[in-house]
Length: 167
Image 1: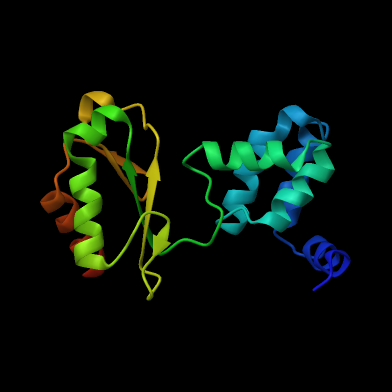
Image 2: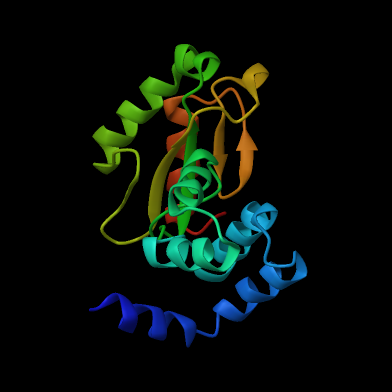
């Protein structure tokens, strides 16, 4: 698919109305980048390369800056996610308090590595450099809710409850 065709089909996407509206509110200025990426994430559920290019062109910022912001913040994802998301903090406090054991357990029990989604699209495992919850280490974000003092067992219990539709 050519870039021109991709851009045309992207511009015809109704979800882009919310993104365009957000950029207009901020005068299509570069300082609107984070708010615009939030609008993209909310509308699409992820921010792919085509969407980053669209935002970069509309706001007049380099694509590298859009990519840098989208990859720096843990609440932005670059590909579609599963029905449930689990974000493991890998900051120093969390890592030394058990985050590695939690990720190893994911690999063993669910055949899932950071950045991957299960084949049935039920669960995505993500990592974040720091969640700012060092006092709760190791911290995990379950579908947007921070939980502290997690262990492989508590994480596994939450995931199993998701799979049984109990949460």
